[in-house]
View 1: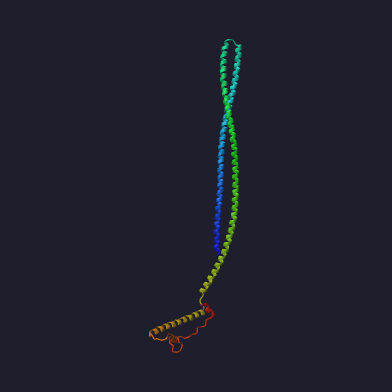
View 2: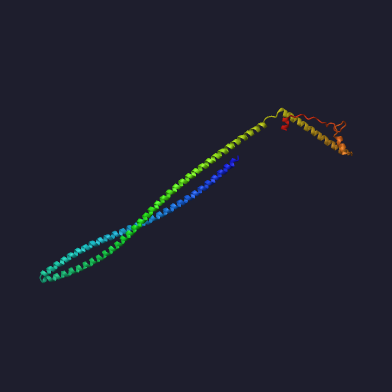
Length: 308
């Protein structure tokens, strides 16, 4: 019976140990999950920065492409101007040749044409110089944009490497955490199995002791019921009757003594108490209590004395 409190104490201690261990494990798990969440947030932030950088690079590439098209258009215009200028020069030379070979009437026309050609040539030269300046500015801007694109490309490569490193680190942390969780769960499962086996063994022992105690108590109860249920023996009834008779005789003697005492008090006769006691309880003839005689008690067996 003493093993039952120990069994319940062991069960309570095991539950407390299980609760404490589970709480610590959940705390560690929440910390690891928080670390994973932080790393995921960092990864998301880096990916957002990478996307922003990519969008910026795309915009710059579009600008570079647009400026390249403008440069190509200006180059085409410049070539057209150069071709037209060459044609104008050729015409001018032809006109000069015609002027040198023509008459006086043709000199006026030639001079006008020459003046017109020179004016057109100056305009074309001015436009060509403006195109050259614009082309130079566009080339410088294109060079700056290319440098910016190269810088952003380097930053993009660095961000991609950081994202890759962070992803590898996150995968490693996740793998280590899962391995650690598996190891801890295996250890905890093994410990729980041992505790359960110990508790089952103690419970089986306590149950066996309790069953043995119950069987013993049932046997004692049955024995007591049998003893109370069986009838008394004849010799026991005889002894009981004899004792009841003796008790009745003693009651009669006591009653008679009380009556004598009342009678003596009523007579108020002075005499010595010792003489009165000797006369009252004398066993000789003429005694006041001739009925008080020594009676031989019946002989009881050993079994009777044990019962009563």
